[in-house]
Length: 120
Image 1 (tube, rainbow, N blue to C red):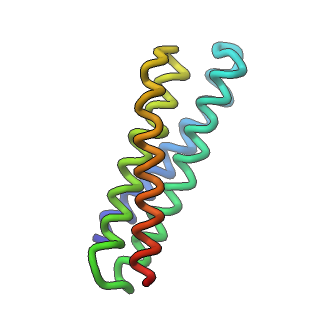
Image 2: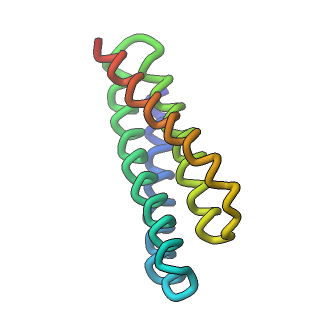
Protein backbone atom coordinates (compact mmCIF):
# COMPACT_ATOMS: atom_id res chain seq x y z
CA UNK A 1 0.00 0.00 0.00
CA UNK A 2 2.88 2.38 0.70
CA UNK A 3 4.03 2.29 -2.94
CA UNK A 4 0.48 2.84 -4.16
CA UNK A 5 0.10 6.00 -2.10
CA UNK A 6 3.64 7.16 -2.91
CA UNK A 7 2.87 6.83 -6.62
CA UNK A 8 -0.54 8.47 -6.22
CA UNK A 9 0.99 11.34 -4.23
CA UNK A 10 3.79 11.88 -6.74
CA UNK A 11 1.42 11.85 -9.71
CA UNK A 12 -1.06 14.09 -7.89
CA UNK A 13 1.73 16.55 -7.07
CA UNK A 14 2.89 16.56 -10.68
CA UNK A 15 -0.65 17.23 -11.91
CA UNK A 16 -1.17 19.95 -9.28
CA UNK A 17 1.97 21.80 -10.40
CA UNK A 18 0.96 21.44 -14.07
CA UNK A 19 -2.57 22.69 -13.37
CA UNK A 20 -1.20 25.55 -11.28
CA UNK A 21 1.03 26.65 -14.15
CA UNK A 22 -1.83 26.24 -16.62
CA UNK A 23 -4.08 28.36 -14.41
CA UNK A 24 -1.46 31.07 -13.96
CA UNK A 25 -0.42 31.26 -17.60
CA UNK A 26 -3.14 29.71 -19.72
CA UNK A 27 -6.32 30.76 -17.96
CA UNK A 28 -5.46 34.27 -16.78
CA UNK A 29 -7.44 36.62 -18.99
CA UNK A 30 -9.73 33.81 -20.16
CA UNK A 31 -11.56 33.34 -16.86
CA UNK A 32 -13.17 35.91 -14.65
CA UNK A 33 -11.19 36.67 -11.49
CA UNK A 34 -13.79 34.77 -9.46
CA UNK A 35 -13.50 31.63 -11.61
CA UNK A 36 -9.70 31.88 -11.61
CA UNK A 37 -9.85 31.96 -7.79
CA UNK A 38 -12.04 28.84 -7.87
CA UNK A 39 -9.48 27.09 -10.09
CA UNK A 40 -6.63 28.17 -7.79
CA UNK A 41 -8.51 26.82 -4.76
CA UNK A 42 -8.72 23.47 -6.52
CA UNK A 43 -4.97 23.53 -7.18
CA UNK A 44 -4.16 24.50 -3.57
CA UNK A 45 -6.18 21.67 -2.04
CA UNK A 46 -4.93 19.28 -4.71
CA UNK A 47 -1.32 19.97 -3.69
CA UNK A 48 -2.05 19.84 0.05
CA UNK A 49 -3.52 16.40 -0.37
CA UNK A 50 -0.82 15.19 -2.75
CA UNK A 51 1.52 15.88 0.18
CA UNK A 52 -0.93 14.14 2.53
CA UNK A 53 -0.72 11.07 0.28
CA UNK A 54 3.07 11.12 0.62
CA UNK A 55 2.66 11.25 4.41
CA UNK A 56 0.19 8.38 4.20
CA UNK A 57 2.71 6.34 2.19
CA UNK A 58 5.36 6.94 4.84
CA UNK A 59 2.99 5.97 7.65
CA UNK A 60 1.71 2.84 5.90
CA UNK A 61 4.91 0.99 6.78
CA UNK A 62 4.92 2.15 10.40
CA UNK A 63 1.33 1.91 11.60
CA UNK A 64 -0.72 -1.27 11.46
CA UNK A 65 -4.42 -1.37 10.73
CA UNK A 66 -6.77 -0.26 8.02
CA UNK A 67 -7.07 3.40 9.02
CA UNK A 68 -3.94 4.53 7.17
CA UNK A 69 -5.04 2.84 3.96
CA UNK A 70 -8.52 4.33 4.36
CA UNK A 71 -6.93 7.78 4.72
CA UNK A 72 -5.06 7.36 1.45
CA UNK A 73 -8.15 6.33 -0.46
CA UNK A 74 -10.15 9.19 1.07
CA UNK A 75 -7.45 11.67 0.02
CA UNK A 76 -7.52 10.32 -3.55
CA UNK A 77 -11.32 10.58 -3.64
CA UNK A 78 -11.14 14.10 -2.26
CA UNK A 79 -8.67 15.22 -4.90
CA UNK A 80 -10.84 13.83 -7.68
CA UNK A 81 -14.16 15.10 -6.32
CA UNK A 82 -13.18 18.38 -4.63
CA UNK A 83 -10.41 19.67 -6.86
CA UNK A 84 -11.79 18.01 -9.98
CA UNK A 85 -15.20 19.61 -9.56
CA UNK A 86 -13.62 23.03 -8.98
CA UNK A 87 -11.48 22.68 -12.11
CA UNK A 88 -14.50 21.75 -14.19
CA UNK A 89 -16.66 24.47 -12.63
CA UNK A 90 -14.05 27.14 -13.35
CA UNK A 91 -13.40 26.06 -16.94
CA UNK A 92 -16.96 25.21 -18.02
CA UNK A 93 -19.05 27.48 -15.82
CA UNK A 94 -21.48 24.60 -15.18
CA UNK A 95 -22.61 25.51 -11.67
CA UNK A 96 -24.21 22.14 -10.86
CA UNK A 97 -20.64 20.81 -10.55
CA UNK A 98 -20.40 22.85 -7.35
CA UNK A 99 -22.74 20.30 -5.76
CA UNK A 100 -19.99 17.67 -6.00
CA UNK A 101 -17.39 19.82 -4.24
CA UNK A 102 -18.69 19.26 -0.67
CA UNK A 103 -18.56 15.48 -1.18
CA UNK A 104 -14.87 15.84 -1.93
CA UNK A 105 -14.47 18.04 1.13
CA UNK A 106 -16.05 15.35 3.28
CA UNK A 107 -13.63 12.83 1.76
CA UNK A 108 -10.71 15.08 2.78
CA UNK A 109 -12.11 15.32 6.31
CA UNK A 110 -12.55 11.56 6.45
CA UNK A 111 -8.94 11.12 5.36
CA UNK A 112 -7.65 13.34 8.15
CA UNK A 113 -9.96 11.66 10.65
CA UNK A 114 -8.63 8.28 9.51
CA UNK A 115 -5.07 9.42 10.17
CA UNK A 116 -6.12 10.57 13.61
CA UNK A 117 -7.70 7.17 14.27
CA UNK A 118 -4.52 5.46 13.05
CA UNK A 119 -2.51 7.52 15.54
CA UNK A 120 -4.68 6.29 18.38
